[in-house]
Image 1 (tube, rainbow, N blue to C red):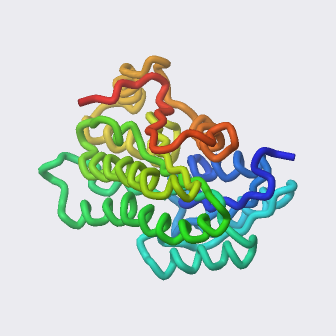
Image 2 (image 1 turned 90 degrees about the vertical axis):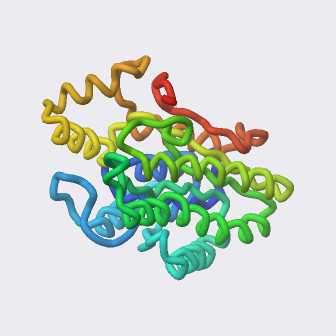
Image 3 (image 1 turned 45 degrees about the vertical axis):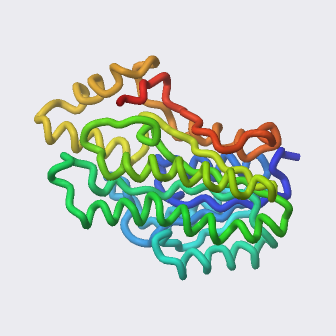
Length: 275
């Protein structure tokens, strides 16, 4: 039996083939948890012309269900409260409760020169990166209280700890997300609910690869040169893999982290956090 056998986890933003959400769902299922994988409907975030997000989610749920864990795919726009409530209701109906929430869905809206960023881009970044995790947490905490505890793991960024030029809105919201985690940890520790922020650095996801391509175009430089410049500050001189982050999530979701709450957990290859 795995360390999470009998537990149920919701993982948001799980459709991307090269994504932290997908890797996390697979890793938690490997530890025995039943999984609800979610994402918004629409085109895949991958530049490779892959199927729509819900098709990818359905395939992921089917892949997980081939093992001992069960999984379902749920369409979820984390910025819509009705979707959030529907996801929680479907999870409870299917699996009987909610033990783990991984707030992974994110947006790079407003990732550009600060003076060029529009209020609409800031609003979009706020809605996805901060409001969505807040609403998800509010929705699952009552269910976790019924179960006598639970784990909420927010996927932040090294941008939760410092700043990199050109990512103003994203950085601001990820700092807010770290504050949200600490608030939840402080208020609900008495209920046995632990909340932490995992802070990935440069991870080879679709979102990160798209950011590299954007920076290369903006600076009129080869992609390899942009990567070398960005990774020069990383002690390991390279990007990590989505499973590196998933392994940290699995630790925080499991019994070995029973006395860990309110922390920022960098998974960053030794990258400095900037200013």
